[in-house]
Image 1: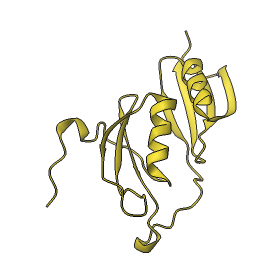
Image 2 (image 1 turned 90 degrees about the horizontal axis):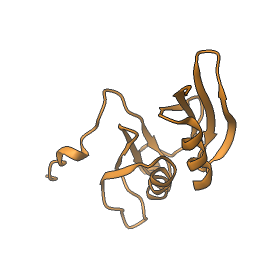
Image 3 (image 1 turned 180 degrees about the vertical axis):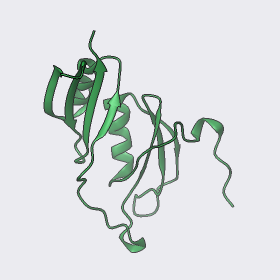
Length: 136
């Protein structure tokens, strides 16, 4: 039986994404650099360099990652049909940091009709991110 997770490693919020992207440790390191994330728990890598679980805190929310495990029914596929949205304090700062870390700018930050400043990036693993903040 494994040890229980420390309280700091338990999920925050009521809904959080669980992404299967390989190599998950590399993805987690990118999210630390791009979004100021913090790795709060990680299962050790196996003999093939894969991990079945990484838990990060990103901007006050939990994000879970694992590598693809085709032998267990999780072969992996290119991310599609979803966008992760970060509600932040400064859209321009968050987009600039993500792009500096290696993300691709999809839509530059601009003031939107709903009253916020909004932009989009794509991370190097194919995940689309919307970055949104109240206009200053």
